[in-house]
Image 1 (cartoon, rainbow, N blue to C red):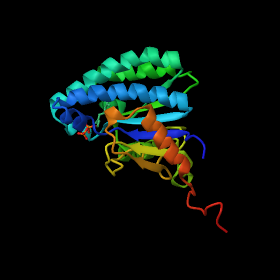
Image 2: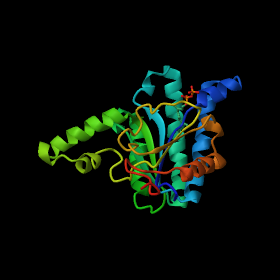
Image 3: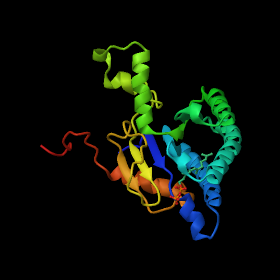
Image 4: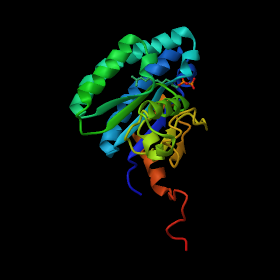
Length: 233
Ligand code: FPP
C-alpha cells in the first residue's frame, strides 16, 4: 500500500516520560515539542501530505493551572520558532479547533502563522489546540444553518466541508503513543476508515524510526472500506 495521505497522531505520555526521570511534567512537554520538530521533518521526508497532531483538547483546560500556563507559554515560544522552519521547508500550517477559546496572544500567532504559510506547497501541518471532535461537529451543523442550507441539502460532503479540517483528506493512519487505546474525541468523523496504530513508546521517544515502523505496519494492512478484499470472490 502507498504512503498515507493523512497521518494523525495522538501524542501521549509526556507526563509519564518526565515522571520516569523524577522530573516535573513540563520537562516532558518540552521533550514532546522536540519530538514534534523531529516528526515534522520525518513526515516531509516520507512524503506525507497532511499531518495532524493533537496537542491540546477542549478537555485539557481541566489540568492544574500551572501546567496549562506552562503549556501555553511553551506553545507561544515554539509557534514563533516554527515560523522560520515552515518557511524553509515549505510547510503549510493550519490550526484545528476553537481559536476563540485560546489566549489572545496565541490566537494572533496562529492566524499569522496560517497567513504566512498559506501558499506553501508542501506538507500541511494541522495542529489541534482547544480541539474536540464533538464541538467540531456541532459548529459544522451551525455553519450549515448559517449558510442557509435546507435540511434536504445537507449531505456528508456539505457537512464535511464545514469541519475545521475543511478539504483535507480523511485520516488514513491514526497513531497513538504510550499504549492508550482511546480516540479521546480526536477526528472522529475524519477517522471513520482510518487504520489504527498504537505503540507503547512515550511521545518524547517517538522519532523518525518510530514513524517509519508505523508506516510499515500501515503498508501491511488491507483496507476494504466496508467492501470485500480484492482477493476474495
Ligand atoms: C500528552 O501527554 C501531551 C499533551 C496533552 C500535550 C502535548 C503537547 C505538546 C507535545 C506540546 C505541543 C507544542 C507544540 C508547539 C506543537 P500527557 O501530559 O497526557 O502525558 P501522560 O499521559 O503521561 O500524563
